[in-house]
Image (cartoon, rainbow, N blue to C red; front, side, top):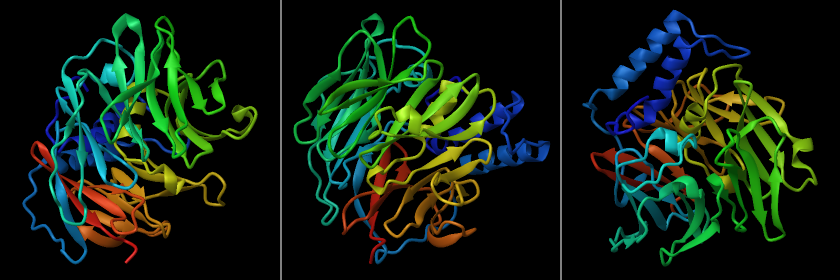
Length: 387
């Protein structure tokens, strides 16, 4: 993928492009391989998804309702506070995927960030807070107080900052000579991220808590895109000898590596670009302590339950995003519809027959948002799945 300035209908199917490329490069899984028919089906899905939507959209104001509109760069999804009352958006020309995935660290001067206050009940509009510092990259994690950003500074390292929802002020968490990337934050303000030296080609993990800072590293893997589950577990993608593995760590352990649970995803051909794509297409909701990820071989969202008898459960065919609900079901999105699906079922309750990206919140009144692309803006609709 050479160009990252894509049409808005394409961002949710970026993963399909990587699947097609991977098939051509001999990408393999321990339990699946791609046939010619699989490749043709993936290409057909890609082409069909890019086509303009001409169907009638079915939705009901008794089921969901409008919250507001956010500006959009047609590529970067906004990040929301857990309660859904704040959103951070990245505008301007997006950095290259080489910068985003941590391969390069060139300074960025084309992005600006805004903080938007949302009113899910009455839909009132408020003036956004403009972040004065340009060239920031919006990270994919937030808690009730902060959203996270990255600042690539060339040979001066890559910094990580916490942006206050209420003021837009930036507090720097890591501002050293290292390349610090992919930060994740939990509800008690603990932060984990990937770090490497400028002359190194392998990331390790850093965990910063009220008790201090520690490094998590096995000395051989490339540790990428960590994600909190609750406050004491961390899931992270790691590349080792070309294989891609999703690993879960118990942060309460003296040595989290001794508690590691691992799920092999692909056996060869893994790259940081691929990891970044499959980790950022989907939104996360760490307070649910559940996480779905896009599987590049199965071409759908998958839920990993390492302590259950059934370890992995595939969601709807061709799904590209999914977020959990309080009853254990999932809001699942494909390129042309969104459903509520119970694990183990082949389909689910129809919500919309149009592309929408589901976002979970902690609110009892608006349990989820749906983000609907409309040119250079995103329409936000709220839904209450607990009613």
